[in-house]
Length: 320
Image: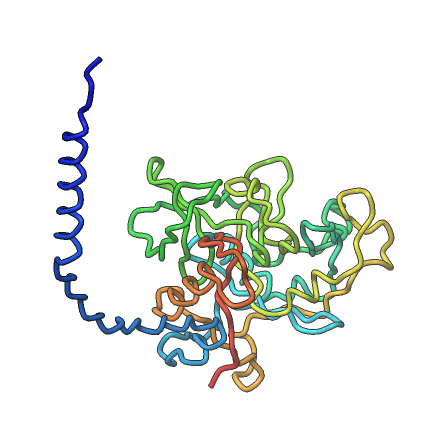
């Protein structure tokens, strides 16, 4: 072990003292002038759906095609149905003939199944002796489950869908598609109208129709021909008393909701036609409306950042 001498300790102390004095005499560094605070831009206020619609130009709305719109009159009020000839031309043509001939007049809503569908037609359709004649309408049609995707003017949704790789809207109708198969089809969303069929794929004619009144039964897609959607009055069908345990079919004739008559708007005097406009799904207003539904603020604590194909539908308004 080395021995530290007193002289060495005194020398070290002197060196430390000199260093401390030098540090004490060193001028303090100049403080930097504080930078002015950066002015943060106020976040843009998210417009509500009501504001977006109120600010939409008239060119973003369209009127109804009288040849493609049905007015079904129930005791509780009118039900307005827009047909989809782009997707089911043969069925739509047949439904036009049925309406022209007054086929639906005096028939009834025969089935209301909770969280599923309300269905109307001829209660005696299965009895050849009592069934109402179809008139000029065809008694046999091919199934119209899908159409070619190529060339379809689909306003695509970027949101994922569990039922199809591609979804969007065409002519106001919810559409699903598969680019690999090249097929596109109408989706079973709330208020969509389909043509009931039996076991045979080609057994639908449009004489028996139903409207979806519950959670979207997308499993029916590509299995039934969809022919349109209810634009107004879906609540009149959805609020009807539920039927019995046999898939919601009414067990007694007294339970059925009578149909007073069904007419095409083109068969009605212009002054009597419902004056309604539908938001165009190829418009900037529709895109903005979807964005507002996708990114929710205000009351919402969690922003879903997602839109479901069947969670939105083009709104309507009285014609100006």
